[in-house]
Length: 178
Image (cartoon, rainbow, N blue to C red; front, side, top):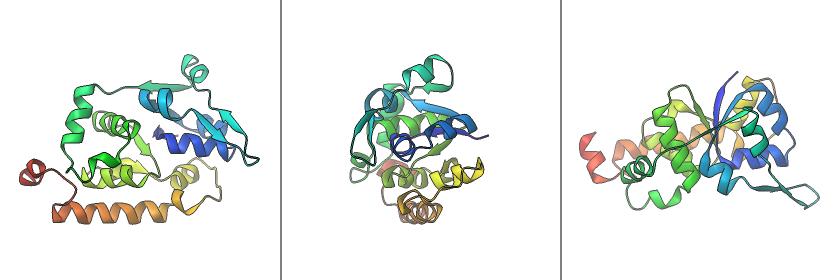
């Protein structure tokens, strides 16, 4: 059983594709406050119907766990990135990355390119996991779009690590520290 910190994109797709309940039952799920309150609000069914994602009852029952980062932690994280990179992270990803840095037991599950790049740039790529790999590890083998694949996740991390080595994507203060 993995302890997964889920990005909004994973929650939305897990609901859309119909494996949300299995994902929750086979993993310990953590969700950043910003993600569940502002981002993972609805999904669109295959028939085009808009459905609300209801996480509050799962939180109240202790089935999923809400985690938070302070405003100062989030500002500090954003300051680590160069001006060309940080605007690409949405608030839920920013909060999730802060939480990830302060909780060593969590794996951040996302397929958002900016969030995956941030993992590599921050030197914490080992703390991220693709949706495909997370599902395989808990016995939920599903056919997923390429965006959710382990291959894409690793490729994106590789690009981010190269950027880190070349001093791209990070603020000049961080680069001089490295």
